[in-house]
Image (tube, rainbow, N blue to C red):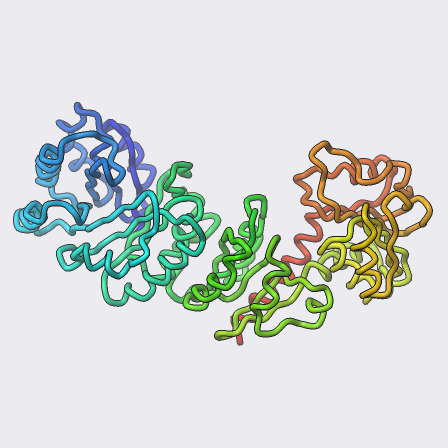
Length: 474
């Protein structure tokens, strides 16, 4: 059941929002604690003109309520409103049991939702929490708690998946880490899902209706949907959720892609939990590409040689790692001609430089790495049989292709001198195009053919999609 949350203070504003939600959600939640005093006398008009089934909620302040009011008065006002017989009513499970029983007796037509909120943490013992909520008193129950990490999020999703066949339950994780729960709810068996007309930037991190529909295709998500996710930190700038969800939808793949913020020391615990959920695979970004290797069941030879994985496929309880960064970069380059026999100068000697050097050498290019400190470049050169030099020696080494893997400087400075950009070269910068590469700007001024980071992202993303979709048929 998809619920549109309305946090307006007047009946006219509530009705206006309800009209916008009509046909797009199943139920409109009216937060009575947000209504101004004069609006209470018009609640009967609201019920009469409502174009959607109504859920009344009068949240107590200690569980996120908007109105400071003594508990006795709150319950009296709430009981008065419930006489209008909304389809649903949300009542905190620690409310006086006598009040709950009285409402059930007086208004048996109303389906009661028993709710619990914790805006500080995710309790460790979720089973004991659910038992303490006395779920048998209610038509359905809701647990909404703050996730302090992706591990909290997954603990809650695993619990929901386990308990949903036994109890009409919804588990929602609040906060930045918890936002993916708004998408994963249908997959783990939640019976209640919440949205609004606008993205909520509050501590709830609730997705807007447009985002749920247009990005995550929420109405198509079921307990048979496979989950794919980006793992790393930071992840805010990644466009992976836009890229992969668009392809899943266009090609009719029953899957959804979310972003999960994850630290290196959380990896082992993450997979213990993730393997209890219907994950099909993962994209892996910094700082996890190397740290993930010991946790994988099998790694393909190229990724082993590179020493980094950016793609993981789940096969049963096995994790299979590969690397699409390297072939993705070369595919982007070879859209403009084969690299075989060409001289390639790579700026930087980090993980991306290593991956590109490996793939370029495999395709028959002559590779040289240029880095501020030569030790890392020399290690790559030794491993792959290429060459390594100091960054300031680039002018002494002609090249056909120039590839920058050095992160864009906050000052916007070039990683090399503009005079070192050869006019006839093909120049690539793997940094996201949104960072506005100073190198590519300078290269365009010299009429160089340029390839930006988006081209590499799209090529490696397509290779990931092939791996993701292949995993669905195994």
